[in-house]
Length: 164
Image (cartoon, rainbow, N blue to C red; front, side, top):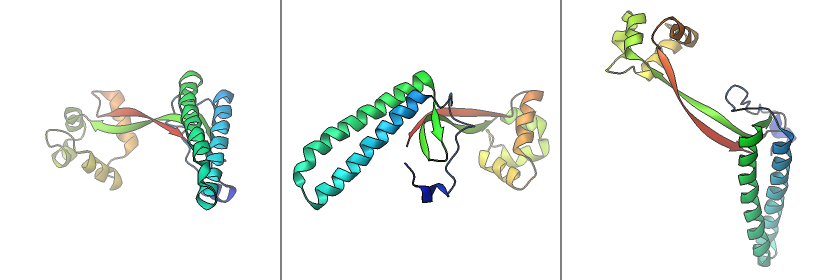
């Protein structure tokens, strides 16, 4: 969980990439319980280090409870959807991480002058980033090109869980 001073730094907003982002109350409630468990663990660990090595059993039990709560939150996300509160920096979500993959044939047909620079049996994604950075092409232009013929750009995606 983020403190008020840390919230002044902009917390990430996963609205564009989160899977089924609907901020369900069931996920929020489970996330609050997880934060409570994590706070208690942090307090007990501090006390254990300072005063009492006998608190280890309590700590172990809480860590098991924390793991169970994380598993429960993942199941709730699957069932009800993802949750985020960017102001508090609270997240219980799955987001999609996309990696661009370019179709060399479509790129060469659409951009023959640039193709010589970027195609080496497959499209060199770093070189395309250079063309975009150098404003020779725009990301929007590449995306729009997909609608006009063979896909110039496709995405490999993988789901990444975030519980904070």
